[in-house]
Every structure is written in C-alpha cells, then in structure tokens.
Image 1 (cartoon, rainbow, N blue to C red):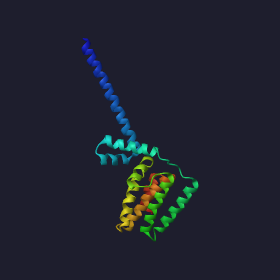
Image 2: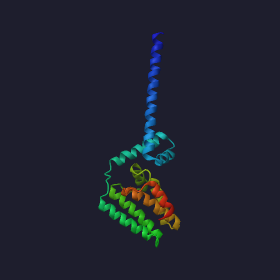
Image 3: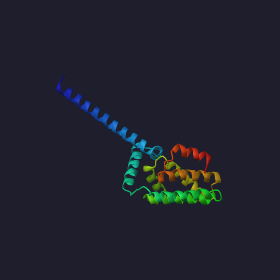
Image 4: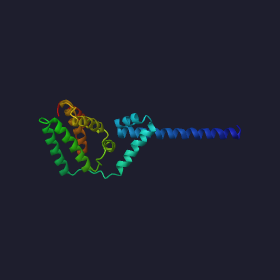
Length: 191
C-alpha cells in the first residue's frame, strides 16, 4: 500500500469516527431534551419546524430559568394557598366564571411566590415548562378557556375543565405529592 492511500484511509476513518461521535452527541442532546420537556419538546418542534432551532429554544428556556430565583414554598405558604384553592373550588358551584378567573389569578400568585416572572403568558408558560413540563399543557389549556371566559364565550363544562387544568399546575407548583394519574382520574369525576 502506498503512503498516499494510507493517509486517505486514515483521514476517512478519522472523519467517520468524528461523524459518529457528533451524531451520538446530537442524539443524546435530543433524548435529554425530550425526556426533560416531554410534550413541550414536540410543541417546540411543531412551532419551529426545525429540530435545531426548537432544541436551541428549549435550552435557552432552561438557561433563563436557571438564572431566576425559583424557590420552594414554605409550609405556611403552601397551606395558605391550598386554603385559597379550596375556597375557589367551592365558589365554582355558585359562580363558575368568577371561580375560573380566581383560579387563574391564584395560579399567578403561586408562580410569583415561587419566583417566576408573571408578565407575558407565553413567557410564563415557557418558564414553567422547564420545571413543570408535564403540566404546562394544562396551563395552556386553562389559559385558553380563561380567555374565552373573559369574553363570555365559555360554558360551564369548559370552565370546569379550566379549573381541572389550573389545579394540575397549582398542585405541581405547590409540590404536593399528587400523581399525574390521580389528576387525570379526578378530571373525569370532579371539579
């Protein structure tokens, strides 16, 4: 074998190894983001139509939230917010639109107490998706219904669903030990 051929083969081998390593690292990054963000990964991918851009956005979200001062609630705060939630839920029977608005406001208060910025809804949802990816869909659904509610375009069943969605995020923010399956089961049977 001549030296030129050996050099070409070595370069080809190094390039193949480099490409394999790059592909492996890219797949690990994708897998990590899919595991971390769940369905929010799919949502980002659908909105960007480009995997690299979607993954970059999710990484930027995580970096942004990392710089926020997110904290756990004290036991007293959790108890106070839980009491407030029970009042909102009880109010639903007599005033579904008002209770839905109160639920939206209470979730915002819990988010603020935890340290999440409470400005623009899309930014709030993006921030929440970093630490609460399994319930951010609930938040988006509840917000959509709450907006219809402010225009008088939501019926009682939709408002009940909004309350169930708000409760899923609320419980996750309070860091209660309710499992997602329990939340799904409750959504079928109660407000």
